[in-house]
Image 1 (cartoon, chains in turn brown, cyan):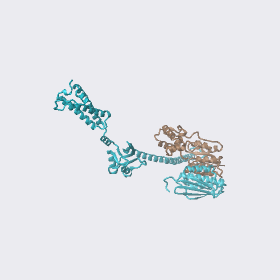
Image 2 (tube, rainbow over the protein chains, first blue to last red):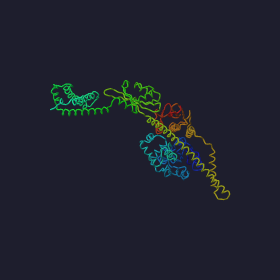
Image 3 (tube, rainbow over the protein chains, first blue to last red):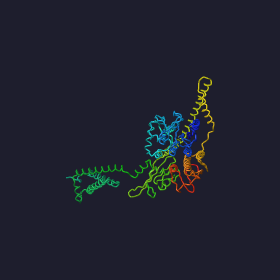
Image 4 (spheres, each protein chain N blue to C red):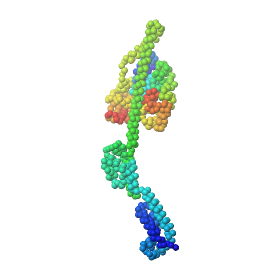
Length: 207
Length: 433
């Protein structure tokens, strides 16, 4: 029996996972929690084999950060990141942390049970790329990695100086990136750019 | 050879009067001239002297009524006296011409000269206020504008520059503060803003204080507008930040709706297939149908369970229970401060990990306190004490310290008398105590 822990704050998908796991003879639901805050504690002293981990969990806790910590302490536990947010950095961060598989709730065609089976069998399944989003005139694929990093910070509402300090860039560089993005998207103001970016889910600050 | 005496009386009278007039003109020029150029001064002197040179001997030798011409005594006078009269006329003409020219150029110079009156008039017509005074405050020169400014601001005339300057900073009708000693601003009753500067000059060895007042109403207005724009910018940034948070909640709600729609669709499909099967309209696998129904019913069953609102205390307690540790909590968690909660969660994680791995504890006590300036959490356990008095902070603790200090808080770990972890997070400025 494969012991599974579900970390998902939204009732619908969580209940769906619980249902699927309960109905499957292969899997045993060990824990089902809503926030990633204490996820790694559960892994101590309990034989968790597989975790279905959401990224934007309750209380603003990041499932990705929890996954990074768990992979460091319990490398044998397999993790499948489960998210609906198309944030551009999630896939590469998950890969960097050593997370086995990655599943988009809405978009991935494969049913979650099949993915769990394949992952437990040793496969590592990731989508090719983060989904393409439209931002003004531009596609999310038109932005460079540095621009996206600046775009994420832009949604915080902080000043350019504060952003530059946080990212270890010069203020001029930050402003130049923003200017390029405004040009690509055709938005007239940075506020509009930030709002559109956040609403599309391309960048999510805090998780 | 005919000389001056040979001329008829009328001619002699004309020449003499002409000479006299020229002399008088040059005399007056000399008297009235203020700061003539060297050339003009010397020319006037020379002409006057030359004039006299001609006048005296000719006068002396031609007193009316004298029938007998007495020749002058000095040799040079004698020369002039006995000069041929043609030559005399020519020299006189030259003399007259030169003196006329001198007078004209002098007059034009005088017309263009800068007199004190000219200075006063110019200054009075200037749009800015000017005031020159001595260090003692005694006034040297005040222009009309400055006088009127003083009247508007202080309600009295400008008598002492010193008093005016000190009144400028006191007067309630809108003295705008500036830390620099040499500049002050004031708002007039009519709404305009004037800026006064004070400067020390040295003029020909004397120290003079110069006070200049300029109309800075537009500048002041622009400054106020800029301030307002900045305030709006800060407000907009704040709204942007909360927008970010709202989007998360909104996205969640949208997803829940989408899931509900899917379930509704699935149920609809299940119903259709069942009906078709039951009425014999279509064939279907009974086992499959049963499965579909089972899933749908299970979903409804789950939906019927009441949703528990997320309680941070429960989260910690449930996790502790899962690893066999009892949590004793005192005080209340600051539920409304998500960033503080996150840090306290991180601390709780560390303590639970430590309690399980090193201390083998069965109970953890957490004391929460909301103090006037900060939020405090103290974690202790009932397990084995650490080996050494000084704690070496491993990866987890140092990571926690980094996070806590980044938020402006402080962390303290002690090993005696019991293992204790203290985390303090400062309240945001402007928060209620």
